[in-house]
Amino acid sequence: ETGVTQTPRHLVMGMTNKKSLKCEQHLGHNAMYWYKQSAKKPLELMFVYSLEERVENNSVPSRFSPECPNSSHLFLHLHTLQPEDSALYLCASSQRVSSTDTQYFGPGTRLTVL
Amino acid sequence: GQQLNQSPQSMFIQEGEDVSMNCTSSSIFNTWLWYKQDPGEGPVLLIALYKAGELTSNGRLTAQFGITRKDSFLNISASIPSDVGIYFCAGQGTERIQGAQKLVFGQGTRLTINP
Image 1 (tube, each protein chain N blue to C red):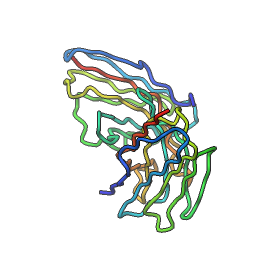
Image 2: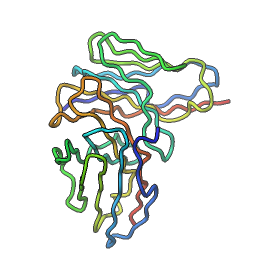
Image 3: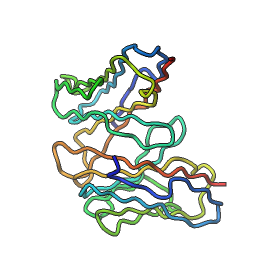
């Protein structure tokens, strides 16, 4: 399934760097999500965009800043991260207000903060 | 908040054996999803269930939406080496976020297969 793509696949950054993660979905969906997956922890929902409007921010630190310029693209801007932010960051999309909606995930970006 | 209990946490089986895992909750869900995740990759959807009692197959995989809407199971028959990975259940309850999904995820079942 290549419906949701993420770049880069791997990223190593220092605590003072600024970087961005990109997600693109080719499924015609109108809801997009950012998740964080750390070792031995369940998936943590970070942000939700519905019709390009941010509708959920799960107490995520301000060093993570999402952006959704249109229904196909989602970004996660990173600055002054901490080593504990190292994780797999997953993007997903779905069709909102559907009785048979399903979230499809991208391959993730493996982030390492030094 | 809603929680899912997924079991077992890990399984070590021989190739060719059947596998069974399940998720339970004290809350009602309207949708159950089963995903598989390979190392360094994102979860890939295996089976989606939308109606209580629904039994759905995808090749050697079979999943059921519990009649109480509080549980679901996934079975894999005649396991092969490529079945190795982490399997997650996810449920969509009554709460949505401006129409978007709010999935609750299980902790995952790590499947290891001895050839």
